[in-house]
Image 1 (spheres, rainbow, N blue to C red):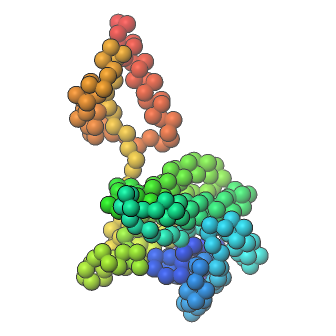
Image 2 (cartoon, one colour; image 1 turned 45 degrees about the horizontal axis):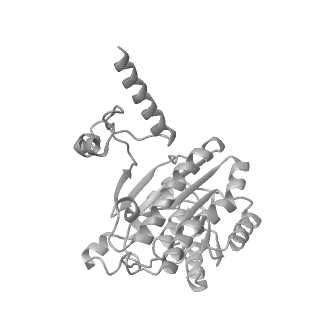
Image 3 (cartoon, rainbow, N blue to C red; image 1 turned 60 degrees about the vertical axis):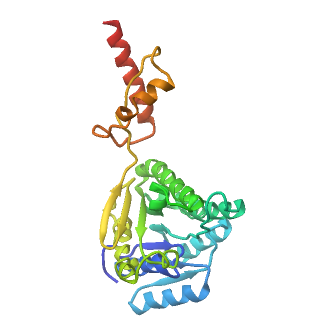
Length: 297
Protein backbone atom coordinates (compact mmCIF):
# COMPACT_ATOMS: atom_id res chain seq x y z
CA UNK A 1 0.00 0.00 0.00
CA UNK A 2 1.11 3.56 -0.65
CA UNK A 3 0.70 6.54 1.65
CA UNK A 4 2.34 8.71 4.27
CA UNK A 5 3.73 5.67 6.11
CA UNK A 6 4.59 3.51 3.12
CA UNK A 7 6.92 0.63 4.07
CA UNK A 8 6.93 1.65 7.77
CA UNK A 9 6.32 -1.02 10.43
CA UNK A 10 4.07 -0.21 13.39
CA UNK A 11 3.07 -1.95 16.61
CA UNK A 12 -0.27 -0.97 18.14
CA UNK A 13 -1.13 -2.36 21.57
CA UNK A 14 -4.71 -2.87 22.64
CA UNK A 15 -5.60 -2.90 18.93
CA UNK A 16 -8.45 -5.41 19.03
CA UNK A 17 -11.26 -2.87 19.28
CA UNK A 18 -12.13 0.76 19.85
CA UNK A 19 -9.35 3.29 19.50
CA UNK A 20 -6.63 0.67 19.04
CA UNK A 21 -8.46 -0.97 16.15
CA UNK A 22 -9.07 2.40 14.55
CA UNK A 23 -5.39 3.37 14.95
CA UNK A 24 -4.21 0.09 13.43
CA UNK A 25 -6.48 0.42 10.40
CA UNK A 26 -5.60 4.10 9.91
CA UNK A 27 -1.88 3.27 10.01
CA UNK A 28 -2.43 0.46 7.50
CA UNK A 29 -4.42 2.74 5.20
CA UNK A 30 -1.43 5.09 5.27
CA UNK A 31 0.86 2.31 4.10
CA UNK A 32 2.23 0.88 7.35
CA UNK A 33 2.64 -2.81 8.05
CA UNK A 34 0.95 -3.35 11.40
CA UNK A 35 1.43 -5.64 14.37
CA UNK A 36 -2.04 -5.93 15.90
CA UNK A 37 -1.68 -6.61 19.62
CA UNK A 38 -4.57 -7.61 21.86
CA UNK A 39 -5.27 -10.20 24.54
CA UNK A 40 -8.36 -11.47 22.69
CA UNK A 41 -7.31 -13.76 19.80
CA UNK A 42 -10.65 -13.30 18.04
CA UNK A 43 -10.22 -9.53 18.06
CA UNK A 44 -6.66 -9.84 16.76
CA UNK A 45 -7.70 -12.07 13.89
CA UNK A 46 -10.64 -9.84 12.97
CA UNK A 47 -8.54 -6.66 12.81
CA UNK A 48 -5.74 -8.42 10.92
CA UNK A 49 -8.39 -9.60 8.45
CA UNK A 50 -9.71 -6.07 8.04
CA UNK A 51 -6.22 -4.78 7.28
CA UNK A 52 -5.53 -7.55 4.78
CA UNK A 53 -8.86 -6.88 3.08
CA UNK A 54 -7.64 -3.34 2.48
CA UNK A 55 -4.54 -4.72 0.78
CA UNK A 56 -2.31 -4.17 3.81
CA UNK A 57 0.00 -6.42 5.80
CA UNK A 58 -0.73 -7.41 9.38
CA UNK A 59 0.78 -9.65 12.03
CA UNK A 60 -1.19 -10.69 15.09
CA UNK A 61 0.13 -10.74 18.66
CA UNK A 62 -1.49 -11.82 21.90
CA UNK A 63 1.35 -10.55 24.10
CA UNK A 64 0.36 -9.18 27.50
CA UNK A 65 2.03 -5.77 27.81
CA UNK A 66 2.60 -6.44 31.51
CA UNK A 67 4.96 -9.29 30.55
CA UNK A 68 8.30 -7.94 29.27
CA UNK A 69 9.31 -11.34 27.92
CA UNK A 70 6.10 -11.62 25.91
CA UNK A 71 6.55 -8.09 24.60
CA UNK A 72 10.13 -8.85 23.55
CA UNK A 73 8.77 -11.89 21.72
CA UNK A 74 6.25 -9.68 19.90
CA UNK A 75 9.04 -7.32 18.82
CA UNK A 76 11.21 -10.26 17.74
CA UNK A 77 8.33 -11.54 15.61
CA UNK A 78 7.96 -8.19 13.87
CA UNK A 79 11.70 -7.99 13.25
CA UNK A 80 11.76 -11.50 11.84
CA UNK A 81 8.83 -10.71 9.55
CA UNK A 82 9.75 -7.23 8.35
CA UNK A 83 13.29 -6.50 9.58
CA UNK A 84 12.49 -3.39 11.58
CA UNK A 85 9.93 -1.52 13.69
CA UNK A 86 9.51 2.20 13.09
CA UNK A 87 6.39 3.07 15.08
CA UNK A 88 5.00 2.15 18.50
CA UNK A 89 1.52 3.20 19.58
CA UNK A 90 1.06 2.44 23.29
CA UNK A 91 -2.72 2.16 23.50
CA UNK A 92 -3.44 -0.82 25.79
CA UNK A 93 -5.27 0.08 28.97
CA UNK A 94 -7.96 -0.78 31.50
CA UNK A 95 -10.32 1.04 33.86
CA UNK A 96 -11.05 0.32 37.51
CA UNK A 97 -13.04 3.44 38.35
CA UNK A 98 -13.84 4.05 42.01
CA UNK A 99 -13.53 7.04 44.29
CA UNK A 100 -10.20 7.03 46.10
CA UNK A 101 -11.95 6.14 49.38
CA UNK A 102 -13.41 3.00 47.81
CA UNK A 103 -10.80 1.77 45.36
CA UNK A 104 -8.92 -1.39 46.28
CA UNK A 105 -5.17 -0.83 46.15
CA UNK A 106 -4.73 -4.03 44.14
CA UNK A 107 -6.90 -2.47 41.43
CA UNK A 108 -4.96 0.80 41.71
CA UNK A 109 -1.69 -1.07 41.15
CA UNK A 110 -3.17 -3.02 38.25
CA UNK A 111 -4.18 0.16 36.43
CA UNK A 112 -0.69 1.59 36.93
CA UNK A 113 0.92 -1.66 35.82
CA UNK A 114 -1.07 -1.96 32.59
CA UNK A 115 -0.92 1.69 31.52
CA UNK A 116 2.50 2.71 32.81
CA UNK A 117 4.62 -0.43 32.99
CA UNK A 118 2.88 -1.86 29.92
CA UNK A 119 3.97 1.21 27.96
CA UNK A 120 7.43 1.07 29.55
CA UNK A 121 7.83 -2.61 28.59
CA UNK A 122 6.88 -2.03 24.96
CA UNK A 123 9.06 1.07 24.67
CA UNK A 124 12.04 -0.58 26.38
CA UNK A 125 11.78 -3.57 24.04
CA UNK A 126 12.12 -1.24 21.04
CA UNK A 127 14.34 1.57 22.33
CA UNK A 128 17.75 0.08 21.47
CA UNK A 129 16.49 -1.03 18.06
CA UNK A 130 15.23 2.48 17.25
CA UNK A 131 18.44 4.08 18.54
CA UNK A 132 20.52 1.76 16.42
CA UNK A 133 18.52 2.57 13.29
CA UNK A 134 18.44 6.30 14.04
CA UNK A 135 14.68 6.47 13.64
CA UNK A 136 11.56 5.92 15.73
CA UNK A 137 8.11 7.29 16.43
CA UNK A 138 6.50 6.54 19.80
CA UNK A 139 3.01 7.59 20.89
CA UNK A 140 1.85 7.28 24.50
CA UNK A 141 -1.87 7.44 25.20
CA UNK A 142 -2.54 9.92 27.97
CA UNK A 143 -5.93 11.37 28.96
CA UNK A 144 -7.68 14.53 30.03
CA UNK A 145 -8.31 12.63 33.27
CA UNK A 146 -4.59 12.79 33.96
CA UNK A 147 -4.07 16.29 32.61
CA UNK A 148 -7.02 17.89 34.39
CA UNK A 149 -8.52 15.28 36.75
CA UNK A 150 -11.81 13.38 36.72
CA UNK A 151 -13.95 12.39 39.68
CA UNK A 152 -13.60 8.69 40.49
CA UNK A 153 -10.54 8.12 38.31
CA UNK A 154 -7.61 8.54 40.68
CA UNK A 155 -5.78 5.41 39.46
CA UNK A 156 -6.41 6.09 35.78
CA UNK A 157 -5.47 9.77 36.16
CA UNK A 158 -2.25 8.93 38.02
CA UNK A 159 -1.26 6.44 35.32
CA UNK A 160 -2.06 8.78 32.46
CA UNK A 161 -0.12 11.71 33.92
CA UNK A 162 2.83 9.40 34.61
CA UNK A 163 2.96 8.75 30.86
CA UNK A 164 3.24 12.49 30.21
CA UNK A 165 6.34 12.64 32.41
CA UNK A 166 7.77 9.57 30.69
CA UNK A 167 7.16 11.13 27.28
CA UNK A 168 8.74 14.45 28.28
CA UNK A 169 12.00 12.73 29.24
CA UNK A 170 12.15 10.15 26.44
CA UNK A 171 11.56 12.91 23.89
CA UNK A 172 14.74 14.58 25.16
CA UNK A 173 16.76 11.37 25.33
CA UNK A 174 15.63 10.11 21.94
CA UNK A 175 15.90 13.30 19.91
CA UNK A 176 19.58 12.90 19.01
CA UNK A 177 18.81 9.41 17.68
CA UNK A 178 15.93 10.45 15.44
CA UNK A 179 13.32 9.15 17.88
CA UNK A 180 10.33 11.44 18.36
CA UNK A 181 8.04 10.81 21.30
CA UNK A 182 4.61 12.34 21.87
CA UNK A 183 1.40 11.88 23.83
CA UNK A 184 -2.15 11.64 22.54
CA UNK A 185 -5.15 12.46 24.74
CA UNK A 186 -8.12 11.06 22.80
CA UNK A 187 -11.82 11.70 23.23
CA UNK A 188 -13.76 8.86 21.65
CA UNK A 189 -16.75 6.61 22.19
CA UNK A 190 -15.28 3.29 23.26
CA UNK A 191 -16.28 0.53 25.63
CA UNK A 192 -14.77 2.67 28.41
CA UNK A 193 -17.00 5.70 27.67
CA UNK A 194 -20.20 4.27 26.18
CA UNK A 195 -22.30 5.01 29.29
CA UNK A 196 -21.24 8.66 29.60
CA UNK A 197 -22.77 10.33 26.51
CA UNK A 198 -26.00 10.60 24.56
CA UNK A 199 -26.36 8.67 21.28
CA UNK A 200 -25.96 11.96 19.39
CA UNK A 201 -22.72 12.80 21.18
CA UNK A 202 -21.39 9.28 20.74
CA UNK A 203 -22.01 9.58 17.00
CA UNK A 204 -19.57 12.52 16.92
CA UNK A 205 -16.99 10.87 19.19
CA UNK A 206 -15.91 8.13 16.82
CA UNK A 207 -12.42 6.61 17.15
CA UNK A 208 -11.95 7.27 13.44
CA UNK A 209 -11.98 11.01 14.19
CA UNK A 210 -8.98 10.55 16.52
CA UNK A 211 -6.76 8.19 14.53
CA UNK A 212 -5.55 10.73 11.91
CA UNK A 213 -3.66 12.37 14.78
CA UNK A 214 -1.89 9.06 15.44
CA UNK A 215 -0.89 8.83 11.79
CA UNK A 216 0.53 12.37 11.98
CA UNK A 217 2.49 11.53 15.14
CA UNK A 218 3.75 8.34 13.49
CA UNK A 219 4.94 10.11 10.35
CA UNK A 220 8.39 11.28 9.34
CA UNK A 221 7.17 14.86 9.81
CA UNK A 222 6.01 14.22 13.40
CA UNK A 223 6.73 16.83 16.07
CA UNK A 224 8.52 15.94 19.29
CA UNK A 225 7.53 16.31 22.94
CA UNK A 226 3.92 17.33 22.34
CA UNK A 227 0.64 16.50 24.06
CA UNK A 228 -2.04 16.33 21.38
CA UNK A 229 -5.72 16.40 22.34
CA UNK A 230 -8.03 14.95 19.68
CA UNK A 231 -11.71 14.17 19.49
CA UNK A 232 -14.74 14.69 17.24
CA UNK A 233 -12.47 16.25 14.63
CA UNK A 234 -11.03 18.81 17.07
CA UNK A 235 -7.26 19.06 17.56
CA UNK A 236 -5.52 20.98 20.38
CA UNK A 237 -2.23 21.00 22.26
CA UNK A 238 -1.86 20.82 26.03
CA UNK A 239 1.16 22.32 27.81
CA UNK A 240 2.65 22.03 31.27
CA UNK A 241 3.40 25.68 31.94
CA UNK A 242 5.22 27.81 34.53
CA UNK A 243 4.01 31.26 35.59
CA UNK A 244 6.44 34.10 36.17
CA UNK A 245 5.45 34.18 39.83
CA UNK A 246 7.07 36.41 42.44
CA UNK A 247 10.46 36.68 44.15
CA UNK A 248 10.51 37.02 47.95
CA UNK A 249 13.49 38.13 49.98
CA UNK A 250 14.41 36.05 53.03
CA UNK A 251 12.77 38.50 55.43
CA UNK A 252 9.46 38.12 53.55
CA UNK A 253 9.66 34.40 52.68
CA UNK A 254 6.78 33.03 54.75
CA UNK A 255 3.55 31.12 54.25
CA UNK A 256 1.61 34.27 55.08
CA UNK A 257 3.34 36.24 52.29
CA UNK A 258 2.81 33.39 49.83
CA UNK A 259 -0.92 33.26 50.56
CA UNK A 260 -1.22 37.05 50.43
CA UNK A 261 0.28 37.09 46.93
CA UNK A 262 -1.40 33.95 45.61
CA UNK A 263 -3.14 35.70 42.72
CA UNK A 264 0.11 37.31 41.60
CA UNK A 265 1.92 33.97 41.83
CA UNK A 266 -0.74 32.45 39.58
CA UNK A 267 -0.88 35.28 37.03
CA UNK A 268 -0.64 33.56 33.66
CA UNK A 269 0.01 36.41 31.25
CA UNK A 270 3.77 35.79 31.20
CA UNK A 271 3.74 32.04 31.70
CA UNK A 272 6.17 29.89 29.76
CA UNK A 273 6.59 26.26 28.69
CA UNK A 274 9.99 25.04 29.96
CA UNK A 275 11.89 22.92 27.45
CA UNK A 276 13.32 20.84 30.32
CA UNK A 277 12.84 20.52 34.07
CA UNK A 278 16.20 22.24 34.55
CA UNK A 279 14.63 25.51 33.36
CA UNK A 280 12.72 25.82 36.63
CA UNK A 281 15.99 25.79 38.56
CA UNK A 282 17.62 28.13 36.06
CA UNK A 283 14.75 30.61 36.26
CA UNK A 284 14.76 30.61 40.06
CA UNK A 285 18.53 31.11 40.29
CA UNK A 286 18.34 33.97 37.77
CA UNK A 287 15.54 35.60 39.77
CA UNK A 288 17.56 35.29 42.98
CA UNK A 289 20.63 36.79 41.28
CA UNK A 290 18.57 39.70 39.97
CA UNK A 291 17.04 40.32 43.38
CA UNK A 292 20.47 40.21 45.02
CA UNK A 293 21.91 42.62 42.48
CA UNK A 294 19.01 45.01 43.06
CA UNK A 295 19.62 45.05 46.81
CA UNK A 296 23.32 45.77 46.31
CA UNK A 297 22.76 48.89 44.17
